[in-house]
Image (cartoon, rainbow, N blue to C red; front, side):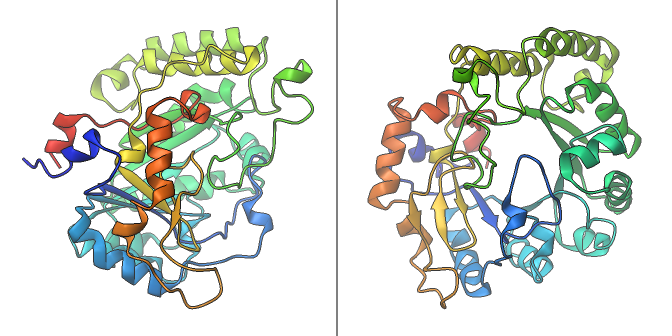
Length: 355
């Protein structure tokens, strides 16, 4: 039992950093309709920056490192980076689109504690329509390969208009390849900062103020159908809910209906409980820091994307003036993005004491 993380909950200055998320690369081998990062030249996080971040994890009490991107597995040194953090006793999680899992299964099994895979469809056709590549079966084969090696796998599905009707098929596909946990969240169509300025703008013509939802959001006709599907899922997968294989409860899944209703109405979003800015930091390829996936840059732990980085200590960057100001603003309700967040993170005192 440890008290060292608890002061974070009482002040805006962080004394520890339980969760560290690294955007290892801006490269991606998907062509998603909701993201245009793949259109840009690939930039990889420099090893000098990675080495510096790894040198601080013990002093900062980092418990989880999430390797993300882009597609993290496109960084040429991702296995060595994973091993670097894992050797320091940090739980290392790979967040991936899964297209390289089968080819690199041995590295995943050797160097990663857990894999989170984006599974955004229950059929090959819908997967290609959303992801822009024919990779559905390849993804499932990759999950089988790493599960055979004993690595826990969570599938995470971003619900949008193209795939909400396939929710039961998505659950079946995940169960068929033996995943440990099945999770869902809604597509974020209301936050310009989501995932580091990589989302294609959907709040132009066709947004709620123009008498229609963003193109990826559910329409008024879709919402009752989605609610009916969730009722069937609660009934047909009761055992998976009770066992915990379904990561969210039926009540929490129904909050997705409320979110899409809020998008349509412009208000009435489901209430959000989150303290991510007091527990986590996202380090982008160039060393810039965000408190989570959904808030803007607050500081920098490195210089530009091309020069050899003059790296500022992470412990200083997370408490830079702009970082403190952002935490104060979110805590006092001045960040509207937080009230509409689709993926809040909350850990209370008991959870932090177990870290």
